[in-house]
Length: 378
Image 1 (cartoon, one colour):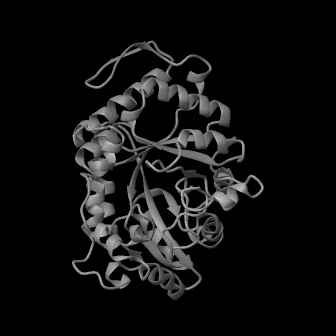
Image 2: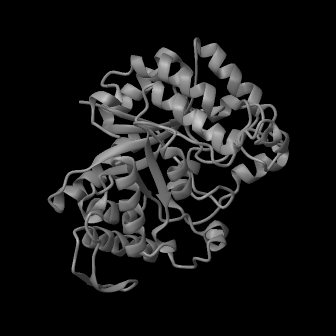
Image 3: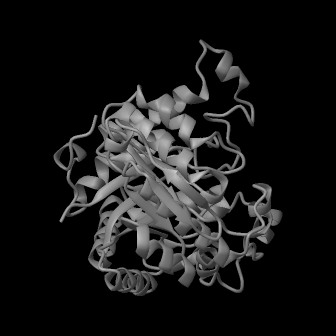
């Protein structure tokens, strides 16, 4: 089998190591104004450097995050398309914030302009204050029903129409994409969510079920659940894992990097880390592995080479892989054996670590094939 590897583009800026949370690279939010004035080098130029680094280091493409503090991934993809040749753009979005016909038109246009390099990362939102920031007060299960309807329509109009639809959230009469947009390749869908409602929607539409890293036994059970639901619909689905890593020449060096970052975490960050937020089942599953007392970075080691404190260092998911190049590759191989077909990897700083991971870790993973051998893109 072949395994696809994606990297991540820090559209929110980033520090130069895990020992700081201040994003002064790639963004003007925290002191990067001088960098922008020096020769006109901007955060887009920095993101383009990371995309280049990932492209030449063996990654198939990259996830472009979408948060309240980031630029719009659709726009970033269009800007970076001319800077890369084979790099595929994984665009995350919450379906409730876009009209499905407009989304289909935008995506088909991007496919046409880039030679089919767009992918979807469909996210449905974690509830709570973060969801209200977007003006979305829909309940958890309603958000997934809305996502299902949204993707029903995107697929329907992509075929050229006329396509009509009557749902709870969307109604459409005689819609459809015009030629040549309707002839473009439909984007692969990476779908996130851990609840029963999420798995039901994923089984209907997803090409890849995407999950954060969890204890390996829990991932095996999750992969089995979504594949069973998909089999009932007569479809097949692959699985993907989003995971941060710290990989170094030796295990001691990797854990030392984690230790230095942990020791710089302040008390308020620790308090927020331990406080529950939102109604995301996936986030709750991540938090279920936290210890009752937290005095050392070692308290967050939940199984060999798996550390559950990554969002203390940079926000986002909690679990990640720490170890030597060989150990990280072996843990990724274990995930492949559990059913993972693709990975979205990241590490801080994304530029240097794209080279490090691409050159030192990916060649050690069984099943890894250079992207040019997997598909013709561009």
